[in-house]
Amino acid sequence: MNEKAPENASAVPVAPTAASFHPLSAAEAKVVAHLQLGDFDRLGDGLRPEREDPERIVRADLLRLLILGKDGLRLHEKGLRLSGAWITGILDLEGCRIPRDIGLKDCHFEASPVLRSAIIDNLFLDGSALPGLQAERLEARGCLSLRSATITGEIRIPGARIGGNIEADGASISGSSGIALDAGGLETRGGILLRGANVRGGINLSAARLDGDVNAMGANIERPGEIALNGDGIVAGGDLALRGATIIGEVRVLGARFGGDVDCTATSLSQPGGYALSLNRTTIAGAFFLRQNASVVGTLDLTATTMGAIDDEQASWPQRGDLLLNRCQYGAFIGGPVDAASRLDWLSRQTPDRWKADFWPQPYEQLSMVLREMGHDEEARAVLITKERLQRRARRARTRSPVLRAMLATIDAILAGTLRYGRQPLLALVWLTLFWAIGTGVFAVAFQNGAMKPNSPVILRSPEWTMCDIERSESRYMPSSAQVLAGRADAGENQLSCFRKQPEAASYPEFNPTMYSLDVLLPVLSIGQKEFWRANSLKPTGTFTLRYYFFQSVIGWALSLLAVAGFSGLVKSK
Image (cartoon, rainbow, N blue to C red; front, side):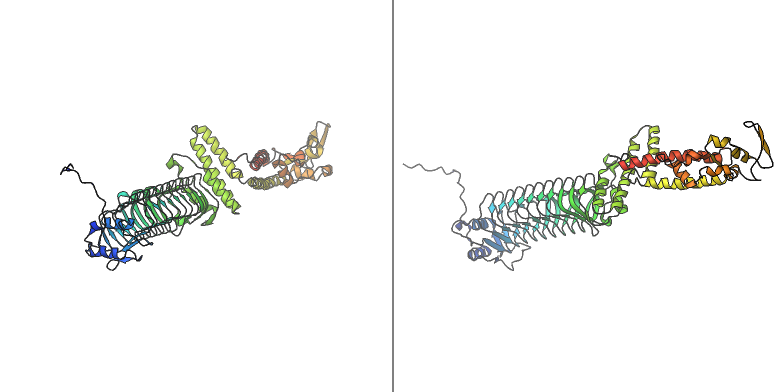
């Protein structure tokens, strides 16, 4: 005997069939009737409905049945194409394998479509209005298109694998939870296109792998005080194109790699008091563009960034204190100023003390190397001179002892004035030439005033020298010869002039003030003038001349040693 099932037994859920959706609405009947045509099924005028219209209502569960091709409802090979529908319920395709395209353009979704872990060809939601999109780990052989769509919730596609582009050009996306687009860990053979999009909330592209570009040209992205665009660890074969975009919030791209350019031409980046654009440790195979009145309000962080070239302009540089260039490496300037004054102004916008550092020498070394490789040797030298001055100033600031600090200041001042810290060792020759000329004048005047004398004991004891010290009208007893000898000098004539007229002086070497100054100045040379002449301190200006003689000797030694040290690089900071 058969047992009767209890009346209160739970009903087993049954999958919906085509029959379970009857009666169909007018819109649904049209969709089913055109299922095999492969053309767009336009409901009404085909435009996105702004309000619920009974003539356009299509149930999401019925669309799911059509998309999956179940219960005899076989799709055209082109897939499902529908526009102008008001879709009620949740279009849940989680985990489904769909070998055809899904085209739901200019539709209004009452609930967020669900495509988690689904495998599809292409998904077109262009012009549609959605409260979000849940497509974590989605796999698409083609593209995911949201062009001109309006999304009032979060687009979630982390871990997705896309064979083409993710296209959201002209889309309006508002993330209710603070994140508008979450594509962390995304892999795509194409790029991410957000050209002209209006995004309110953050965009997460961290650890994404793209063969193409991240293109947000002309986009408006707003997330004040937070990370507006997160590209940490992204690897893209193309560009990061932000040309003409307006971004309020931080653009953070740490440790990323781009096979093309990072283009911030005419871009407005704003994160007051924080990082407006951080490319820390990012590698850019192409160039970094910051020009055409681009605006950076906040910190531009290029710390340890490697890029092929820089194309910028002075008007687009961040304010003083908002630039970080330490360990940044670049190959050339392909635009913007290349003169030392402008580029030093660029570097001066770094303020290491803000980041608890006293000085960063690498940006100056890098700039100098690039300018030299571009053929601007003088500009490169000027940069290194400034680097030496600032580095030595920082060293003095670290010195606690006032005495040592004063000594270092003196040494630095001497090296700055004579050798430009070893960067212009030939400047020592200019100083040597200057003192040579000054010495020539001093010794020439002394010779004319009789303040020079022979540097020979024999001559100084001879009558022709000693008798020239008194006039002819006078005489002097000479103990050496026990004779009284008459003076030889004319009235008003100095001893040196008188001596030069004596026949005995004809064989004595002539005094040459130019050679004498050179002989005093260069310690390694021996011209012979110092051996035969010296200042006479007993005559007017003689004491000054003698003192200057010693001064110039010391200067000659010092400048000679500094020149050698400068050419050998011993005085440069390492």
